[in-house]
Image (cartoon, rainbow, N blue to C red):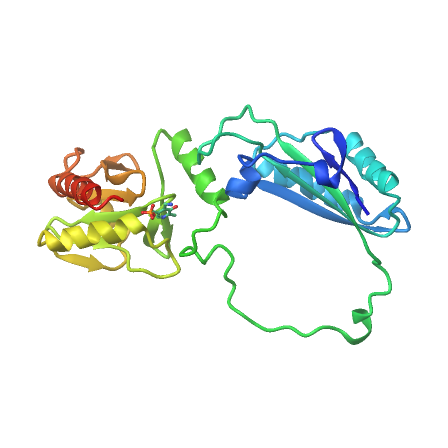
Length: 284
Ligand code: PMP
């Protein structure tokens, strides 16, 4: 059976409801959602869901696409249009679509989707005997070595940096820098040692990071793969980031303080040139 779904003010057969590939929900997980149970055609705990929806939207600075009254009316209408009495209503609101960029503008039109899933809610057979669980580490947001599109926090970090007049942010965890919001972070100590965080699930294993470290070693630099603190970075001779599009980008200010003399240093410059030459020569 083809459901009727709601998409940005339209009621459409589910097969015809299409969202842009540039939607920030798809690209950056820049979206929020709610699920409300329906029993006998009635919405369960609706006030709670509607309240949390508004709090989530406000936290991400996404404008509510419809008024409170219309939101309730849409919940009732989607049930009527699908003749659903028992199941759930899923709704998702993303920031909207824009050419891919961590930074977003505030003129985007949110993407608003609602659909129903018809299923019995009462009489769950598992209520009678219960379920079994396993224990595991709390790992949400912690598998950073996987290049997932769970990029909401990185995006918000870049927006915050921009608000504070900076270009990017270094993330700090347990007193140590993990990486930048979409690149790896490195320092060159006053003794000339290149220090970069060791690989683990705390950071993305940057392809550029690996290539630049190889080039640094080949150039005779001492490379130490270990965590470093914001204080060490601020006191370093040089700081730089690496990524597929920045290559080697000098960082000349941290929290408003100049790094070294506040100008790109010789090691970063040399590594940038070496990276460009070496990678152009092996480009396919
Ligand atoms: N860390 C993060 C969080 C990133 O998003 C990126 C770039 N996508 C990197 C590091 C750098 O990785 P690469 O050199 O492969 O671009």
